[in-house]
Length: 156
Image 1 (cartoon, rainbow, N blue to C red):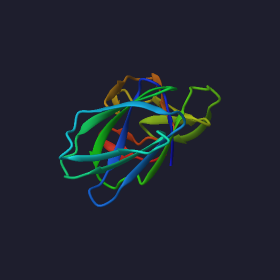
Image 2 (spheres, rainbow, N blue to C red; image 1 turned 180 degrees about the vertical axis):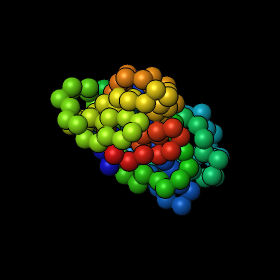
Image 3 (tube, rainbow, N blue to C red; image 1 turned 90 degrees about the horizontal axis):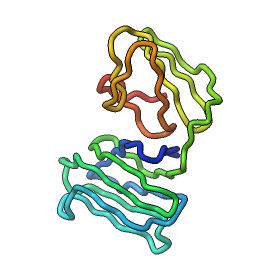
């Protein structure tokens, strides 16, 4: 799976106790910081310093990870569930070449090569990845990382 990450945007990485998750980066990793101690999360950096191997050692894996590379800093939240097995992190950009992809009673979804634009069409506030989107407002998200729409994981 490819995550087109915006620098400074927090993405959710889903991990599972029963399997290893491999995260590859375009640029060399300089430093890794996490809020989870060694007794709850196994992490290993490859020799080429571009691949990070993660596996939770317990189910209470809620926390975060910051990976600093030569190309930028990436922020992740952890959740336990149906894990991502292999993730490739690329620098995403809001390229603004959107096409209408999906429409529901609550939102309009536009998609481009590396990002998603979500427009709220309901008068109620839309909660997307913890961010509140008001009526007729739009916000761009990187393509790849899971999107939590009003608390439910949504796949586009």
